[in-house]
Amino acid sequence: MPQQDVLIIEKRDGVALLRLNRPAVYNALNDALMDALGAALDDCEADESIGCVVITGSDKAFAAGADISAMKSFGYMDAYKSDFITRNWERLKTFRKPVIAAVSGVALGGGCELAMMCDMIFAADSARFGQPEVKIGTLPGAGGTQRLPRAVGKAKAMDLVLTARMMDAAEAERCGLVSRVYPAQSLLEETLAVARALAGYSHPVLMMLKEAVNRAFESPLNEGLLFERRTLHASFALADQKEGMAAFLEKRAPQFSNC
Image (cartoon, rainbow, N blue to C red; front, side):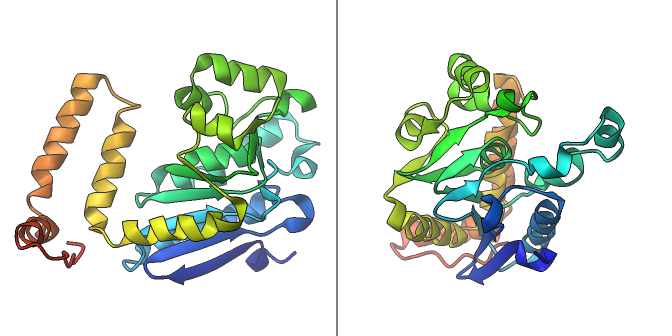
């Protein structure tokens, strides 16, 4: 499949919808797809009209994992010298705008890891999550042993990575991996509605909020609180803060200018 077809991009109402599109292999993640996703995120970062990004797949699969056929013959130096995963999987780590993963069907291995790189996961009631790398004689390499324990706790993460079992959407929501669960037929509609609402807020404030919450996982509490306080102080330099508070007091909808 040509590279331009592995990712379908739609922009509307301040939202970019990025649809993983390798249906023959359940959206298995290869270099072409991850390069295309990184390029799309670069474009969305630069596009001032975009306030939120949604990443989704198909009804059957968000993504079934990394493309095993592309890496089955790797040796250590192949992986090391090509900077495997680091080179083109981690653009989401540095992307500053909110990203929602809309997950239907399976999100396994690298697919689960890609979803966890997003800021929120909204799942169809049909969704299933897992890190089954132990079955193929290897282990997760894009955050499965690191982000998963932070999301669901050590005991549940150990259960998933050691047994390779899949977790359904209801369990994923109970243990904190998933933010919301919707019927499969309404998942995308509901996710896009939330994304449009986010895109209507002040874009600089959204980025500040995302950075502050992420700081909670990287800093001691007091350092995180200081960062939050200074970010609050910085928000008073925004025209959007003046507009937001004025609109509240005047009992009208705010008209944010994203500055």
